[in-house]
Image 1 (cartoon, rainbow, N blue to C red):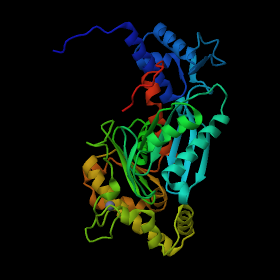
Image 2: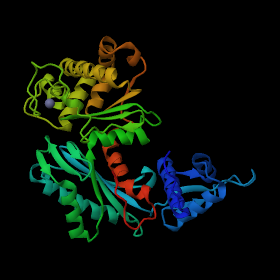
Image 3: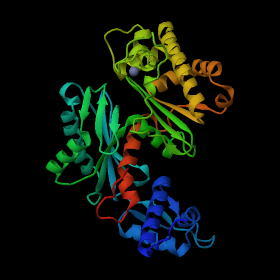
Image 4: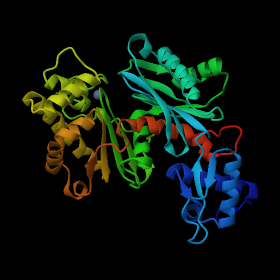
Amino acid sequence: MAQRTAVRPEEIRRHNVSLVLRHIHQHGEVTRAELTAATGLNRSTIGALVADLVGLGMVEEYVPPGRDRAGRPSHVVAPRPDGPYVIAVDIAVERVVTAAVGLGGRVYSRRATVIEGAARSPAGVTEQIVADAIWLASQLPPRARPVGIGISIPGIVRRRDGFVEHAPNLNWRAVPFADLLRHRIAEVLGSDLDVWAGNDADLGAVAEHQRGAAFGLDNVIYINGSVGVGGGIIADGAQLHGFGGYAGEIGHMTLDPAGPKCHCGSTGCIETYIGEHALLRAAGVEDEHGPAVVARVFAEADAGDEQALAAVHEVAVWLGRGLANLVNVFNPQVVIIGGSLAGVLRLGQSSIEAELDRRAMSAARSGVRILPPGLADDSGLIGAAELAFQSLLAAPDSPVPAVAN
Ligand SMILES: [Zn+2]
């Protein structure tokens, strides 16, 4: 039996204040009675912990109107609009989106910038984020303070230190991006903000699990498909990271060894059949790419254009084949299809479902739903915010941010 060590009251208090803040962060606005029920702590302890969080300037309490005759109303606890916020960054091939996100996942302000050429280099994107951090702060109450930066990147990212091994569609290789940004923020803003980075699909899965279409579900696959195709997997309630943190490269499942060459070095990866380039090729679009062109193909399909419809159908069938493999291996409750593939889902769901019926094993197939993201295009952005909030949630009253995993 493990040796017992005495736990000091201060440690218990810190654990409990973290527990309460996590609950408020998850739900946005809760009553004291809900906090009591959710944490199993007694009413006076909850009162003291909420008072701590009020004292830290993170939450505010108010008595909801109209309940004064029905006995004592329970105080409502909510994040303060001028409380701590994180700077969430979603880097895509064509644009950078930044947002100031507060506790409870509230997006207070946001900005999107198209990037091309030198602006798409690590240095260019760094400068954009620094400029956005200044602009976001100017949109918030003066008292609001940033507590970290979280970045969603379409590539292979080492979570521990935000080192980008390879982001093929940005043409980044071996970039210590979190370090670059941390140094530049310190130089320009004079603040030592923590910077965290993760793979876009991994972060999208977290966001959809916490606040989106997979809320309350423990077996989830999130696929983010645009130019590249990535995946994030939540299995039995835990995110699947893999040995080096590189799990979820769904885009590089081999569907046909005799298929097209893939940038990863292999051939016939599913990305070469369901990525945007494959959709545009099938739709007969030459020498054009980007979100606007993909949107045009979807609009043509909506209008009944035969070639556009056939292109969507072709991509949907390949997507269904890939999903059948994933459903057989992971037995998810829900598969969420985001990025431009959400358009393929909208127009081609019957083709996807038919291919799943044909190829997935019936026991796993019968329990799975295929859904668009609950957070629309913001899954990666909100997931990046969650990443940046980890330190604060782990130790709300710690002057030095704790190390997140
Ligand atoms: Zn590949």
